[in-house]
Amino acid sequence: MQQVSAVILISSFRRQLKQAVFKRVRPHGLSPQQFWILNAIYEREGTALHELADSLRMDAPTASRVVAALVVSKLVRTDEDPSDRRRARLWLTAKGRALAVKLHEFARQVYGAAESGLTIKERDALRALLGKAIRNLSKLESSTRSAL
Image (cartoon, rainbow, N blue to C red; front, side):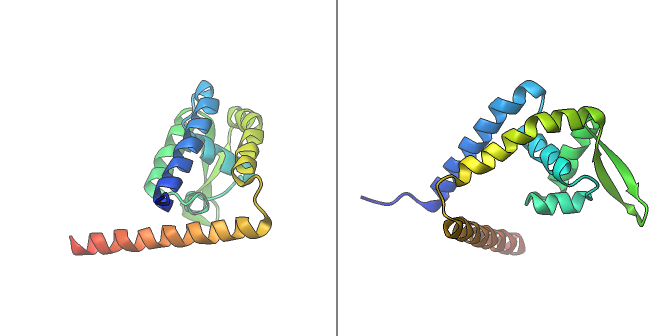
C-alpha cells in the first residue's frame, strides 16, 4: 500500500484546524486569522506588526490587513512606538481584551489537542521537520519568482 504524502497530511491537518477554529470564533465575528492575531496580541501586548507576523509565520501584508480589520472592529488599537515613529505597537482595546480573555483558553486547547500524545522529543522533531519543509517551499517559491 502506498503511503500518504506528507503534503496531503499537512493539508488535512491545516483544514481540520481551520474548521475547528472557524466554528468556535465565527459567532464572535472573527475569522481564524483574526483569532490567531488577537490571541498573539493578548499574549504579547505592545508587539510590533512585523514581530507579530514573524511569530505567526504570516507574511507582513496579510498580517497588516488582518490587524487593520481588527482595528476597524475596535478590538485592537495601534500606538506609535516612542523610540521609532515608523513602527506601530499593537494593543487590545477593552472590547478586544474581553474577547481575547474569553477565547484564550480555546487557543490553548487547540495547541494542546494538536500535540496531544506526543513526547517532548516527538514535538521537537515535528517542529524541526515542519520548519525544514517550510524552508524548502520558500526556496522553491523564491526560485520560481526568479525564473519569471
